[in-house]
Length: 372
Ligand SMILES: NC(=O)C1=CN([C@@H]2O[C@H](COP(=O)(O)OP(=O)(O)OC[C@H]3O[C@@H](n4cnc5c(N)ncnc54)[C@H](OP(=O)(O)O)[C@@H]3O)[C@@H](O)[C@H]2O)C=CC1
Ligand SMILES: Nc1nc(=O)c2c([nH]1)NC[C@@H]1CN(c3ccc(C(=O)N[C@@H](CCC(=O)O)C(=O)O)cc3)C=[N+]21
Image (cartoon, rainbow, N blue to C red):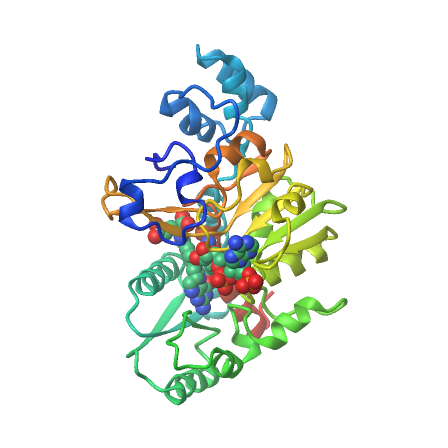
């Protein structure tokens, strides 16, 4: 975890992008857990917890208590959550995908292909596309890229999609979002062949995900990554209460459908929800996909809950080389004292999204070529 310049989450709890002005002159804190804990040296708070992610909770606490001469109650409270290392799990998945791709290539001589269409020149989108290409190269997926100018027409985008739909060397097609405002997302996403919709955003794929007894060709990568993190961290889902914060088509809604498929009892919290804090506090599992930095505070969390933080929110940080750092939708410092397990940002869900894209592309090539 990157070190944090803010000692708590109160000064940026509701900002999408913390203006520099506010970072330098933060308003007085609106919330502070009481009594405010004495400041601990940085290492015991996050680094020590992160360095012990695989130890059972009791042993981790004992190790931390032994390792620190600070007030043991504070140490125990600070270190209570297991850190779910998305970067590590994603690496394992990429390796598994790489092995399967090599086997497929050796057996039938086919290499999976992924086409990415990027419209416009948003820096963040360019970075995501570059990272996807790198990840494809590393596992042996052939990537195809189309870059269109911001003022390209919807027709042009659809024409490229149609070409990729008909190209047998392409098994997955991804249109990077967000699209420029003048484009209709629906028309464009509808044009992707459902058999090559590795993002899982086509309405038929989402519809099948929602229906009992049906399965989509593809499950959207980010929610699939969240579920994989829960499964691989040994979090039981069946019969548990889950709250998903956010209901977007690409994260919140499919995440809620997946949790429901896994037999959780699911509530969805959105911008019009009354008492989101009270509803969230009932959850054994929380998936936060909002886009509001540090919205979910320690007081929203049931002790021992598992938290998957999808949010990627840049906040100004003059001390970081990029001038900003990424934080999640959950106030990590507070939440990690209450939760049983939590994903960090960065290094949590983000790397899983890319790993799942590779996995979906491999599955697509296997299905198309009937390779078991
Ligand atoms: N890690 C990863 O791989 C990925 C991360 N992300 C990140 O996840 C976050 C969410 O992304 P996305 O789903 O695309 O975002 P959207 O903006 O499409 O959706 C946000 C959702 O949050 C709800 N919401 C907004 N404000 C509040 C609030 N104060 N309280 C409760 N609910 C609220 C909205 O409610 P309503 O429906 O009522 O408007 C909406 O349903 C972003 O930070 C994004 O960057 C996204 C994709 C992948
Ligand atoms: N068609 C489409 N499919 C997507 O899946 C899609 C999209 N459009 N548009 C944008 C969002 C966002 N998204 C992320 C992917 C990886 C990280 C990621 O790897 N994040 C790193 C940090 C990266 C950094 O430091 O900048 C991490 O969390 O550790 C984050 C976000 C996919 N999205």
